[in-house]
Amino acid sequence: MKNKYLYIETFGCQMNVHDSEQMAVLLKDIGYKTTEDSDKADLILINTCSIREKAEQKAFSELGRLIMLKEENPNLIIGFAGCLAQHLGAKVHSRVKEVDLVFGTHNIHRLPEMITAVQKQRKKITRIDFSSKIHSLNVFAPPPKGSLCAFVSIMQGCDNYCSYCVVPYLRGPEMSRTPEDIMDEIQKLTKHGVKEVTLLGQNVNSYGKKMDHGCNFVSLIKKIEKIDGIERIRFTTSHPKDLSDDLIDCFASVPKLCEHIHLPVQSGSDRILKRMNRGYSSEEYLRKIDRLRDACPQISITSDIIVGFPGETQKDYQETIDMMEKIRFDSVFSFKYSERKGTAAQKLQDQVSEAEKRRRLKELQALQDRHTQEKNSALEASVQEVLVEGRSRNSEQDMMGRARSWRIVNFKGRPDLIGKQVFVEITRGYLHSLRGKMINR
Ligand code: 5AD
Ligand code: SF4
Image (cartoon, rainbow, N blue to C red; front, side, top):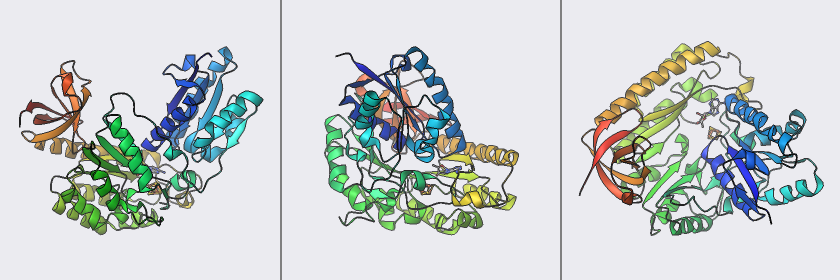
C-alpha cells in the first residue's frame, strides 16, 4: 500500500502542540506518516489558536496558502482544528470551500473515523460538540527520538472565565485526568529517555478539585517525584488565586521540582483586576510572591501582562509598572488587549486606542528587558545545574541546556553530554540566555 502523508501546522500554546501530537498518533493507526513537506501531503491539518486576533489572522493566512495545493492534488484533504475551529464551526466551510473537515477541541479522538468518512463520501464534516469525558488526553504520543523533556497534560478546559479570555468557551469546563493515567504516561515517557516533565493545564493549581479521587496538585507532584528516571518536574500555568501554601512549600521540599513558577498577574491595578474577574488583589498577589521568595529565595518568577484592557487609565497602567518595579520578574510575556467575541469584556466600554496600547506595551517591554538583563547579569559567576539537551544554535562547538530556572545556558562541550546534568559556571548573562563553562563538581 502506498504511504499516505500527513502535514500538521500548529499555532498557539503548548496545549495545541500536545493536541497535534495526539492527532499524529491517531492518524498513524490508519496509515498516515507525518511529513514536514506540505507539497507531499495527502492530508493537511491546521491546528488553530484563537486567544488574540493576530492568532486568528495567522491561521487564515496559512489556510489560504495551503488550499492552493488542492489545485495540484484534488484528492488532498484539508482539516481545520483547534480553538478557532471550535469557535467558527461550519462557518469555516462557507468562508473557505476547500476545507473538508472542521473539528473542535473535544473531537480529536474521532479523527480517524472523520477522515475515513471524508474519503469515502467526499462530504464536508463539522464536529464541534463538547464531551463530558477526557478522551484524547489518554492517547500516548511517543516523544520525538532523543527528547529529554516532555509536556504532560494533566487537565483540560477552564472554569475561571477571566473576562477577556475565550478559553473556557473553546476548551470547555475544567476536567482533570486521573493520577493513574498521568503516572502511566510519565512511566512510559521515562522508557523513551525523558528526564524532565512539564505538567500542563490552564490552571494546574486546581488539579483534582472536581474529582473524587482525593489527589490534589501537591499530592500529584509528590507521586511523580517518586518515579525513577524523572529528574526534573515543572508545571504551567498557575492561577495566583489558587496558589496554595502547600504548593509554595514544594519548592523548598521537593528536590526534583525546578525553581521556576509562571504566575500570570495580568495587571497591577485592583480596579482592572476586578474588571478582569481575576479573583485576587494586587496586595494578595504581592503576598504570594513574598511567600514564594521566603520558601525559595532563588526562585525564578515569570508572568503574563495585558495592557490596554477596556477602561485601563494611565494611572492603572502605572500601577502595573509600579508592581513590576516592586517584583522584578525574571521574564514577562506581554500583550495588547485583543477583543474576543462572546467574552464578558467585549461588552465593556472605554476602549483604549491602538496607538496607546502600542505605546504602553513598548514601554513595559523595555522595562522588563532591563529587569531580565539585570537578573541575568547578576547570575555571572554563579554555578547552575544544566540538563544538556543538544547542540547550541550559536556554534558547532557549543552545547545547550536549561538551568533549573528555565534559562537557556550555552557552553563549550561534547555531544556525549546530552542527557546528563552538568554544572556550568556562568561567565556572561545576556537578555535571552546565559553563557558559561562547565566545571567538575
Ligand atoms: N487579549 C490579550 N491577551 C490575552 N490573553 C488571554 N486573552 C487575551 C486577550 N483577549 C493573554 C493572557 C494569558 C495569556 C495566555 O494570553 O495574558 O495569560
Ligand atoms: Fe483564560 Fe483565565 Fe482560564 Fe487562563 S485562567 S485560560 S486567562 S479564563
